View 1 (cartoon, one colour):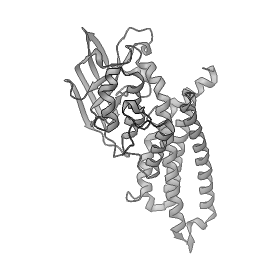
View 2 (cartoon, one colour):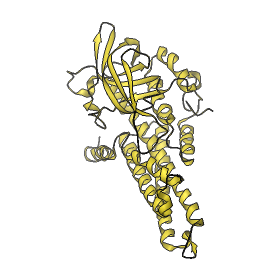
View 3 (cartoon, rainbow, N blue to C red):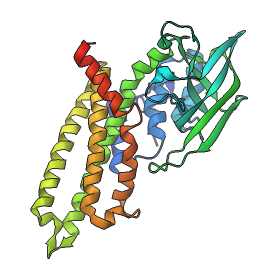
View 4 (cartoon, helix red, strand yellow):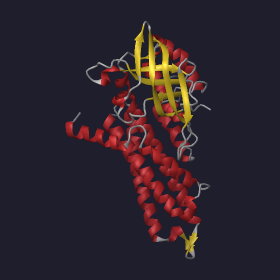
Length: 335
């Protein structure tokens, strides 16, 4: 269909488009009320770890399959005791000859159950002055002995995505499956997280725009007190408020997409976008459901599913509380 690897260079097997084109695909997905399918994390996050940090051999081995959809990817960051705080991870890899032995577990992993390849974040130097200096990324194939996939977790929304636990017990990983340089993994994550957070922001704002249009159509048809809901001033004002905020969000997201395309999007600005748009998405979801009345609470109505799907956006890719910390840090320290 041409929706995978949109901004992966053509010579690597991708479509050869730009970052803006890749975001158009995302927007059209959520405009159709499909925030749940799991290809954005594969397409707009995971593939780019391979493109940016993979060796020639790794790129030749994995990129053709990832852009064709034959290889499904996951990225293992979150652990039972470490979510937004990546420096709190416990998964560890120890050198054994030319190989590494990986032990630990991950949780809430998108595509975890279906994945053919997992990019796993692990500690490789527990004695580093700062844990950030001792983290490495590993490419773990699904058929490696000791790699087990746990149950598919039951979520309240985004049910089209498989989210699962991953377990690693003495998984032997060859040096050729180290992604990038040893002990540089944390820095790679910091370089890629702005893109991931902007992806969430774009999905969130686009999904909120869908909910607004769905609700506008509903209130123009639903009648109460002898006229349509759209004729009530209180409803009109609520629509005006939402439309204004959505336009603000869209302008900011589009500016961030332009900045990222030019290599100028910093962590603080990406955090602002993720925080603002995901909060707005949940605000719009609640208001649109309210305007649907009792029918909005029924699962058969798109707004009910959209309401459930939206909730996690303020949590993953770094909780919004962490986003505020990152934004405030730049304000206070100037760094």
